[in-house]
Image 1 (tube, rainbow, N blue to C red):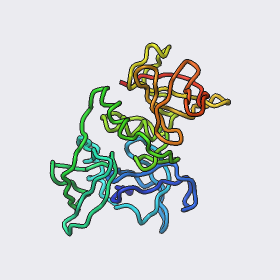
Image 2: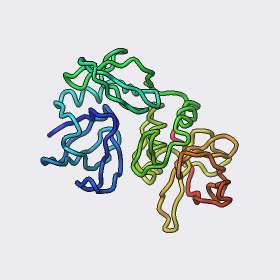
Image 3: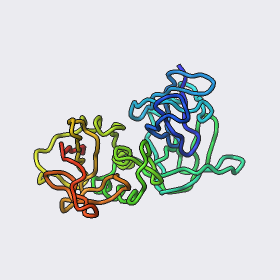
Amino acid sequence: MIYGICNLGIIPVRKEPFHTSEMTNQLLFGEHFIVLERDKNWSKIKLNFDGSEGYISSVQYQEIPEDFYYSINSEKTVLSGEILDFISNVDNNLITIPLGATLPSFNGKELKLDKITYTFDGKVNNGKLSKKEIIHNAFAYLNSPYLWGGKTPFGIDCSGFTQMVYKLCGYQLNRDAKDQASQGEVLSFIEESEPGDLAFFDNEEGEIVHVGIILKDYNIIHAHGKVRIDTLDHSGIYNSDLQTHTHKLRIIKRII
Protein backbone atom coordinates (compact mmCIF):
# COMPACT_ATOMS: atom_id res chain seq x y z
CA MET A 1 0.00 0.00 0.00
CA ILE A 2 1.21 3.50 -0.88
CA TYR A 3 0.34 6.51 1.28
CA GLY A 4 0.56 10.19 0.41
CA ILE A 5 0.03 13.70 1.72
CA CYS A 6 -0.61 17.02 0.01
CA ASN A 7 2.54 19.16 0.32
CA LEU A 8 1.26 22.06 -1.82
CA GLY A 9 -1.31 24.72 -0.97
CA ILE A 10 -4.10 23.46 -3.25
CA ILE A 11 -4.11 20.76 -5.93
CA PRO A 12 -6.97 19.61 -8.20
CA VAL A 13 -8.57 16.19 -7.93
CA ARG A 14 -9.94 15.05 -11.29
CA LYS A 15 -12.58 12.56 -12.39
CA GLU A 16 -10.26 10.90 -14.91
CA PRO A 17 -6.44 10.85 -15.28
CA PHE A 18 -6.19 13.82 -17.65
CA HIS A 19 -5.44 17.50 -17.06
CA THR A 20 -8.51 18.36 -19.13
CA SER A 21 -10.79 16.10 -17.06
CA GLU A 22 -13.47 17.55 -14.78
CA MET A 23 -12.21 18.73 -11.39
CA THR A 24 -14.39 17.02 -8.80
CA ASN A 25 -12.51 18.00 -5.65
CA GLN A 26 -9.41 19.68 -4.29
CA LEU A 27 -6.73 18.64 -1.84
CA LEU A 28 -5.57 21.26 0.61
CA PHE A 29 -2.15 21.27 2.24
CA GLY A 30 -1.73 18.51 4.84
CA GLU A 31 -4.61 16.27 3.71
CA HIS A 32 -3.51 12.63 3.58
CA PHE A 33 -4.71 9.72 1.50
CA ILE A 34 -4.18 6.17 0.26
CA VAL A 35 -2.87 5.73 -3.27
CA LEU A 36 -5.06 3.12 -4.98
CA GLU A 37 -3.31 3.18 -8.36
CA ARG A 38 -0.25 4.98 -9.66
CA ASP A 39 1.70 5.43 -12.87
CA LYS A 40 4.26 7.96 -14.03
CA ASN A 41 1.72 10.72 -14.56
CA TRP A 42 -1.36 10.06 -12.42
CA SER A 43 -2.35 8.57 -9.06
CA LYS A 44 -5.82 7.47 -8.08
CA ILE A 45 -6.33 8.30 -4.41
CA LYS A 46 -8.82 7.79 -1.59
CA LEU A 47 -8.91 10.73 0.80
CA ASN A 48 -8.75 9.79 4.47
CA PHE A 49 -11.09 12.54 5.71
CA ASP A 50 -14.19 11.68 3.70
CA GLY A 51 -13.37 8.60 1.60
CA SER A 52 -13.75 10.49 -1.69
CA GLU A 53 -11.73 9.25 -4.66
CA GLY A 54 -10.19 10.82 -7.74
CA TYR A 55 -7.02 11.37 -9.73
CA ILE A 56 -4.15 13.71 -8.89
CA SER A 57 -0.87 14.37 -10.65
CA SER A 58 1.83 11.96 -9.47
CA VAL A 59 4.27 14.87 -9.11
CA GLN A 60 2.00 16.93 -6.86
CA TYR A 61 2.21 15.07 -3.57
CA GLN A 62 4.66 13.62 -1.08
CA GLU A 63 4.76 9.89 -0.38
CA ILE A 64 4.73 9.09 3.35
CA PRO A 65 5.33 5.88 5.33
CA GLU A 66 2.46 3.86 6.73
CA ASP A 67 3.27 4.63 10.36
CA PHE A 68 3.14 8.41 9.74
CA TYR A 69 -0.17 8.04 7.88
CA TYR A 70 -1.75 6.32 10.87
CA SER A 71 -0.13 8.62 13.41
CA ILE A 72 -1.93 11.54 11.72
CA ASN A 73 -5.21 9.66 12.13
CA SER A 74 -4.69 9.34 15.87
CA GLU A 75 -3.80 12.98 16.58
CA LYS A 76 -6.07 15.99 17.05
CA THR A 77 -6.68 17.76 13.75
CA VAL A 78 -5.37 21.32 13.57
CA LEU A 79 -6.46 23.56 10.69
CA SER A 80 -5.26 26.94 9.48
CA GLY A 81 -7.75 29.62 10.49
CA GLU A 82 -7.11 32.56 8.15
CA ILE A 83 -8.39 33.13 4.61
CA LEU A 84 -4.78 32.96 3.42
CA ASP A 85 -1.58 32.19 5.32
CA PHE A 86 1.78 30.58 4.75
CA ILE A 87 4.23 28.09 6.21
CA SER A 88 8.00 28.05 5.78
CA ASN A 89 10.59 25.29 5.66
CA VAL A 90 14.13 25.24 7.05
CA ASP A 91 15.39 27.13 3.97
CA ASN A 92 12.75 29.87 4.56
CA ASN A 93 10.89 28.92 1.40
CA LEU A 94 7.21 29.82 1.73
CA ILE A 95 4.17 27.74 0.83
CA THR A 96 0.88 29.61 0.69
CA ILE A 97 -2.00 27.75 2.34
CA PRO A 98 -5.75 28.49 2.31
CA LEU A 99 -8.32 28.49 5.08
CA GLY A 100 -8.84 24.94 6.35
CA ALA A 101 -5.43 23.53 5.43
CA THR A 102 -4.30 20.74 7.76
CA LEU A 103 -1.24 21.18 10.00
CA PRO A 104 -0.02 17.64 10.83
CA SER A 105 1.83 17.05 14.10
CA PHE A 106 1.52 20.73 14.99
CA ASN A 107 3.07 21.68 18.34
CA GLY A 108 2.12 25.35 18.38
CA LYS A 109 5.08 26.43 16.30
CA GLU A 110 6.12 23.62 13.98
CA LEU A 111 4.40 20.95 11.89
CA LYS A 112 5.75 17.90 10.12
CA LEU A 113 5.17 16.07 6.87
CA ASP A 114 7.00 12.93 7.91
CA LYS A 115 10.65 14.06 8.21
CA ILE A 116 10.14 17.53 6.74
CA THR A 117 9.56 20.29 9.29
CA TYR A 118 7.74 23.57 8.64
CA THR A 119 7.07 26.56 10.87
CA PHE A 120 3.71 28.28 11.24
CA ASP A 121 2.67 31.14 13.52
CA GLY A 122 -0.83 31.92 12.25
CA LYS A 123 -4.32 31.41 13.62
CA VAL A 124 -5.51 27.80 14.02
CA ASN A 125 -8.79 25.95 14.53
CA ASN A 126 -8.81 22.72 16.51
CA GLY A 127 -11.32 20.62 18.40
CA LYS A 128 -15.11 20.77 18.28
CA LEU A 129 -16.54 24.28 18.37
CA SER A 130 -20.04 25.40 19.33
CA LYS A 131 -22.84 25.51 16.77
CA LYS A 132 -22.77 29.30 16.62
CA GLU A 133 -19.22 29.06 15.29
CA ILE A 134 -20.60 27.32 12.20
CA ILE A 135 -22.25 30.59 11.22
CA HIS A 136 -19.11 32.57 12.04
CA ASN A 137 -17.00 30.34 9.80
CA ALA A 138 -19.62 30.32 7.05
CA PHE A 139 -19.38 34.10 6.77
CA ALA A 140 -15.63 33.78 6.15
CA TYR A 141 -16.55 32.40 2.69
CA LEU A 142 -19.15 35.05 1.84
CA ASN A 143 -18.81 36.24 -1.80
CA SER A 144 -16.36 33.47 -2.66
CA PRO A 145 -16.86 32.60 -6.35
CA TYR A 146 -18.55 29.33 -7.24
CA LEU A 147 -16.14 26.70 -8.54
CA TRP A 148 -17.18 23.12 -9.27
CA GLY A 149 -15.01 20.89 -7.07
CA GLY A 150 -13.58 23.83 -5.12
CA LYS A 151 -12.96 23.95 -1.35
CA THR A 152 -11.37 27.37 -0.72
CA PRO A 153 -12.43 31.03 -0.42
CA PHE A 154 -10.97 31.50 -3.91
CA GLY A 155 -13.47 29.10 -5.46
CA ILE A 156 -15.92 26.68 -3.83
CA ASP A 157 -18.97 24.59 -4.64
CA CYS A 158 -22.07 24.11 -2.49
CA SER A 159 -21.04 20.89 -0.74
CA GLY A 160 -17.41 21.95 -0.50
CA PHE A 161 -18.66 25.03 1.33
CA THR A 162 -20.73 23.11 3.88
CA GLN A 163 -18.01 20.48 4.33
CA MET A 164 -15.28 23.04 4.99
CA VAL A 165 -17.40 25.12 7.35
CA TYR A 166 -18.22 22.06 9.43
CA LYS A 167 -14.63 20.82 9.24
CA LEU A 168 -13.37 24.12 10.67
CA CYS A 169 -15.69 23.50 13.61
CA GLY A 170 -14.45 19.94 14.16
CA TYR A 171 -17.17 17.94 12.37
CA GLN A 172 -16.99 15.58 9.41
CA LEU A 173 -19.32 15.85 6.44
CA ASN A 174 -19.17 13.79 3.27
CA ARG A 175 -17.97 15.52 0.11
CA ASP A 176 -21.11 15.56 -2.07
CA ALA A 177 -24.53 17.02 -1.24
CA LYS A 178 -26.37 13.74 -1.86
CA ASP A 179 -24.04 11.97 0.59
CA GLN A 180 -24.23 14.74 3.19
CA ALA A 181 -28.02 14.32 3.07
CA SER A 182 -27.59 10.83 4.53
CA GLN A 183 -26.02 12.26 7.69
CA GLY A 184 -27.72 13.72 10.75
CA GLU A 185 -31.31 13.91 11.99
CA VAL A 186 -34.28 14.79 9.78
CA LEU A 187 -36.34 17.84 10.73
CA SER A 188 -39.98 17.95 9.65
CA PHE A 189 -40.41 21.70 9.25
CA ILE A 190 -38.34 24.81 8.67
CA GLU A 191 -39.75 26.15 11.96
CA GLU A 192 -37.87 23.37 13.80
CA SER A 193 -34.53 24.41 12.31
CA GLU A 194 -31.90 26.58 13.93
CA PRO A 195 -28.85 28.42 12.58
CA GLY A 196 -26.23 25.89 11.52
CA ASP A 197 -28.63 23.19 10.29
CA LEU A 198 -28.40 22.06 6.67
CA ALA A 199 -31.06 22.35 3.96
CA PHE A 200 -30.92 20.12 0.88
CA PHE A 201 -32.49 20.69 -2.52
CA ASP A 202 -33.33 18.37 -5.41
CA ASN A 203 -33.80 18.56 -9.18
CA GLU A 204 -36.73 17.47 -11.32
CA GLU A 205 -35.56 13.86 -11.15
CA GLY A 206 -35.59 13.94 -7.34
CA GLU A 207 -31.80 13.85 -7.03
CA ILE A 208 -30.26 15.98 -4.29
CA VAL A 209 -28.03 18.48 -6.06
CA HIS A 210 -27.61 21.41 -3.67
CA VAL A 211 -27.04 22.19 0.01
CA GLY A 212 -26.79 25.28 2.18
CA ILE A 213 -26.50 26.36 5.82
CA ILE A 214 -29.59 27.76 7.52
CA LEU A 215 -29.28 31.18 9.17
CA LYS A 216 -31.68 32.96 11.52
CA ASP A 217 -34.86 34.66 10.29
CA TYR A 218 -35.43 32.12 7.47
CA ASN A 219 -32.28 32.95 5.57
CA ILE A 220 -29.72 30.59 4.07
CA ILE A 221 -26.06 30.94 3.09
CA HIS A 222 -25.02 28.79 0.13
CA ALA A 223 -22.78 28.67 -2.95
CA HIS A 224 -24.69 29.59 -6.10
CA GLY A 225 -22.69 31.79 -8.47
CA LYS A 226 -20.95 32.90 -5.30
CA VAL A 227 -21.40 32.25 -1.62
CA ARG A 228 -24.48 34.37 -0.94
CA ILE A 229 -27.37 34.84 1.47
CA ASP A 230 -30.92 34.26 0.25
CA THR A 231 -34.36 33.65 1.73
CA LEU A 232 -35.49 30.12 2.62
CA ASP A 233 -39.16 29.13 2.62
CA HIS A 234 -41.18 25.92 2.33
CA SER A 235 -40.74 25.93 -1.45
CA GLY A 236 -37.00 26.42 -1.41
CA ILE A 237 -34.50 29.25 -1.95
CA TYR A 238 -35.85 32.61 -3.11
CA ASN A 239 -33.26 34.75 -4.87
CA SER A 240 -34.15 38.43 -4.46
CA ASP A 241 -31.80 39.47 -7.28
CA LEU A 242 -33.57 37.21 -9.76
CA GLN A 243 -37.00 37.60 -8.11
CA THR A 244 -37.60 33.86 -8.31
CA HIS A 245 -37.05 30.55 -6.54
CA THR A 246 -33.80 28.95 -7.70
CA HIS A 247 -33.76 25.70 -5.69
CA LYS A 248 -36.53 23.32 -4.56
CA LEU A 249 -36.39 22.26 -0.90
CA ARG A 250 -36.16 18.52 -0.30
CA ILE A 251 -35.07 17.95 3.30
CA ILE A 252 -33.61 19.65 6.38
CA LYS A 253 -31.02 17.87 8.53
CA ARG A 254 -29.48 18.59 11.92
CA ILE A 255 -25.89 17.42 12.18
CA ILE A 256 -25.09 18.78 15.67
